[in-house]
Length: 113
Length: 110
Image (tube, rainbow over all chains, first blue to last red; front, side, top):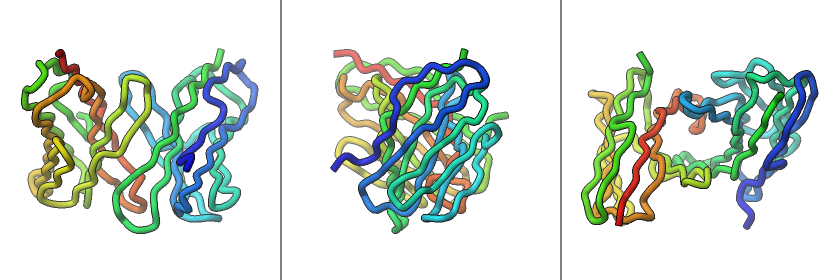
């Protein structure tokens, strides 16, 4: 199994450009998450989706939109990228039973110039 | 004051030493996660605790919900344990809705 797959792994954008980070999981998990990780700040939750068709804001949702396309896929969109969105982005998923285990993708490093 | 405080921030140990990483938090939670982030950046979920103690191999995690404190112990540490260890209490609503500590960077020397 591939687990949680994120694309792209690296991206450089100019201020104002848009892009979508893709995330897919093949473990039949209900819940999926997008986090960002910044030096000195730790990880922070951007958005999450508890099940197909639902999304909820996390701690830092401003400047982002998400789509839970189906049970497998959860995408994160930056409509107008800003330098403050330079970060490493992680997607994760968790199984329906409350086992507490989270499965993370490898991360996507985004630089906004 | 940060909602989640980990100590120490950095830790260097000799192979074989017993390691303890502490986590104190100020938010009310029902569970807490310990995560490991490898030098290459990948993140692995180690434990989720809501009470008592859990053990997996050489790793032991404990939690005291009333005192809002958790510890991660590594017995017989090994250089492959070198990583950043992150404590993350749950906000609730979804098990991935977490408040993350800034991590403890552990380096184990051979």
